Each structure stands twice: as C-alpha cells, then as structure tokens.
Image 1 (cartoon, rainbow, N blue to C red):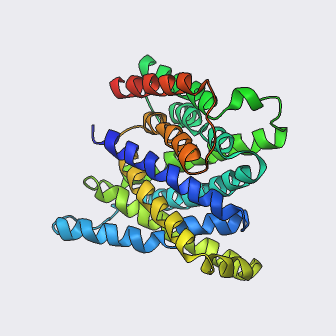
Image 2 (cartoon, rainbow, N blue to C red):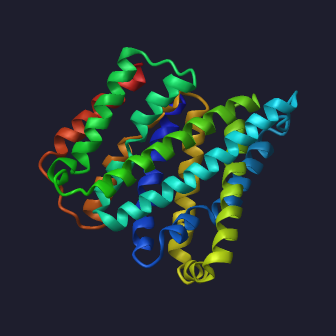
Length: 298
C-alpha cells in the first residue's frame, strides 16, 4: 500500500508545480516553461538516487541479460521523455487559452486514457471496482474544474489540446512503469533510475532546442531564478512520488487516486490566486473521495 502515500505526495507537489508554471507562462512561451520543469530537476534526481545508494550500498546497479531488453528499455525511456515534454507544453498552452482550473481538468483525462491503453496494450487488469473508480474520478474532475459551466464556451482547439495532453501524459506514465519493471531492481531503486534517465534526456533535448531556436527563452528563465527553481523542485519531487507509485501499482489506479490533485488545485486557486469556487465543487469533492476509495479497495 506504499503507492497510496507516494501518490498523494505526488499530487500535492504537482498541484503546486502547475500553479508556479501558470505564473511563469504569463511571461514566457510554452517551451521555456516546459524547460523550467526539468532544468534543475536532474541534479535533484541524481542526489535522490545517490541518497538511496548511500542508504543501501549493497543494491546492484542496473544491468540487462540481453540486448533486446536493453533496446526496449531505451525505447521506453525515450518515448516517456518525449511524451512528457509534449504533454507539459500542451498543458501550458491550455493555461494560456482557458482559465487555470479548466486547463488542469482537461489535461486530467490522463486517468481514463491510462486505463484504456493499459488494458488494451500493456496487460493491465482492472477489476469492476477499479473501473468504477476511474469513471467516477473522471466525472469528479469535470465538476471540480468547472467544465459544466464552460462546455459551450470551450473551443474545439481547447478540447483537442486537453485530450492530447491527457493522452500524452498517459503514455508517459505507462512507459515509465514498463521501464521500471524491466530493471528488476528493488523498490524504489528502479523508479529512481528511470526518473534520472528520463529527466536528464528531457533537459538535454530542451536546452539544445532552445539554444538553437530561441536563446532568448533561456535568458528569460535565468531572469526568473526563484520561480524557475520552484517549478523544477516541485516537479522533481512530484515525479519521485509518481514514478515510485507507478512501479508498485497500475497506472490507471495511481492516476485515479492522483486526481486529488484537482482538489489541491482548487485550494491553491482559492487561497493563492483568489479564485471563487463554484457551488458544484462540493459534489466534485465527494466524487473524488468515492473514486479514491474505489481504487484503494480495488
């Protein structure tokens, strides 16, 4: 049951990361804000992995018995890195098109995508109670993000970006889990290695891209060191929680419980951005609790 506290911690950190990214997106482009998520996360992930080996120095390093497994593992790492970059950039773009909570709500279609793709292509087995939790959680996210009031106002472009972001996040999570399982290391070493490799590749790709195409964006991040550091710190801490939880439990259940992030987002919107909550929020909160209970019992 360790996946439960790891998931709750990850959701809390991710809610703050999204809040800081929203602030940063007011002045910088989507690619720059996406880089802020990873630029300092690599050293933090490396320090976390070093701490694990300092705690248990007898743990082995990753190794593969055949080349095919190493190729598959590499494909998962590259795929997860690229999909997470795309998902984050799409969500930042959502922040610029719609209000904060709706942007997060659209991107949180991740849970239902993870369930569908996991069962169809990754051998995930979900009980009826697990499916119930996934569906109820998706409905709760719609209520909490205010989708009912803005359904007629949301453009097809916004809906497309939201679905694409959720699908990209789901693929990222599924490939991260598969990569962690291939390493066959004790918990939480496999998740920590995958985290370090994914973040390092993402940082390398984004720094290279911006260095060639838009050097001014790198300067923009340097001019906002405090906010950039907060985005990176909360992002890495959240990823430690997500990667650890997904190495223990199926992605669909982890991401359904992780929808409590929307609750944290609403609280941040209320007390940090001074946004007034709508009346239906109490129903959304009740559904989040029901969904969380379903996936924990599943």
